[in-house]
Image: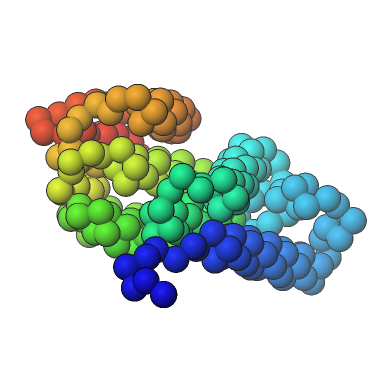
Length: 264
């Protein structure tokens, strides 16, 4: 065997995707059954309801909170799309070398796991402090960016880290951060450094959270990357609009910056 030849990893990639999807489905089903068991113990008639209807009975999602039901449903949809993209890559990515194909597949599956984590966090009976949720995002994106030669500086001041937001605002903010950092991973050509800053500001009687995510890449992407970035920007604008928070996105000197101010 030629030691310099690249092995055919197509079957490995397919098995990795299939195994991960089956594992996610199993974990989701077990977790849902556990939640149903808790609800049954509290004499809530959830057993006869379809899966999506039980979201109204889950801890942290009141029965009348249709906004949270919709948000969790959107995260479920995103999870499904990410798994579908991973499966498509495993089946049709023959134009990519084996290592690159596995790297892209790993990224898709990691994003799916992150979406699952965000959905779980959204329905917790007692939401954790903001810093705990952000730590999960840092643990996800920091090594991913490092693999691409991008050093991520992560700064969250203590006052912001211990803050508890309403479940709806928390999920919106986490999804916005996920989208912004995912754009850095995918589209920051030539970047060597990225920054994440979250600070709690107090001006007179008004408190607000100031979020800033930046990179030193080449600025506005082109071609397919531009289309994907536009979709990401549209998602962030919608999330910021639902939060009622001003959002600024665009080229900087150098690179690209996302800034959001959320009044508390």
